[in-house]
Length: 479
Image (cartoon, rainbow, N blue to C red; front, side, top):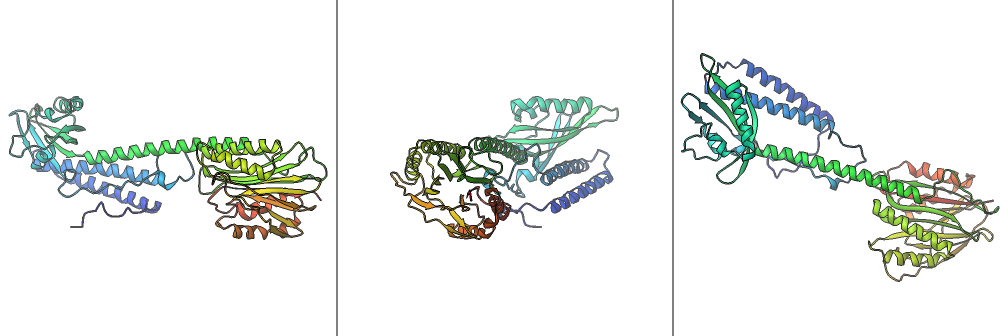
């Protein structure tokens, strides 16, 4: 005898589609073979053993039909669920049903016959065990059987028995019983009437099986299916809301941008948001450019840690505060200090990083500050370098943090690149990511516009797998 399956055995990985198709083929072939054997089995209805065997064949066919349907669902996937990117693996747990022990109720089938002429009942030993009855006690008659059944299920049992005895309909249904030990079990009953010579019902036979664990497993599948559907619907709604919020606050650029009130020293600007390829949720990355009343240009990129609507709304709040303070004339270093205070006082703790630059076209002076963020890259004459960053810790990391400022004089034709973490996929170290970006210097030197430079970045890094969202903002100084 092969060893029984143990519940402690590690869960197997889902089989490939081809393997499931093979299982479906084998199941249907086995179902046909069982049906053929059942039809070839001689049974005139007078032999209790033969009736019991035929009932088991019917039950086996019923279970094989269920197995065929379950394998088809495994092959086709859950039905009636919205399409969505792959979800986080922690959202759905794999349910591994355990095989019944050889001596468990689930592995046993009991049989019974009720003689209507003598009002006698005959039960198999397995049925006594299934119903929790003393094997030395008399089996219950049809009139006494409902006493074991829960009140709400008695009408169902009565209807099945009545249809069988009066209309000669086969019995195929379930009801719940209360065992003497207080355990509630679900029993599946299959049976037929036995007719005498004049066509009257003389007796009724049935096989009963405890299907409590099977129904419990089916309920678990149904409940987890519904939970998965709700989870995916919630994730889709959250993503849609986050996307709408992000689109409402980020500049809706299509191609390069020039501010209308700037003179010949105006910056040529272009940007791109690159979503994560491994997460369905929107992150807190942003890019922004704003023309100020004194003719200066505000450039910023940043990233609020996390994903989802809460993070996106926090990003919108932070970006709104940044714009407001910049319009009021706040310099980049002080601006970062106040943003840190804003996050530090927020109801929900959060961490963020940012770079804020203020460009004065008349003197081509770039004043900038950073908070735990990759420094801007400056490209000139086919070469590039990383700007030396002033002091600045992550926003929200510590109270009372002070942020330094740095200045850089730009020249006509210079390209300034601001980006968030994750732009260079698979490289977490800032120096490695910066090195990859600096390798683009010759191509930037040939680019005519900021949009051409963004296109170079997207061609190089946009199509590769990335674990996090990213933004890139490029400013090109007019020649």
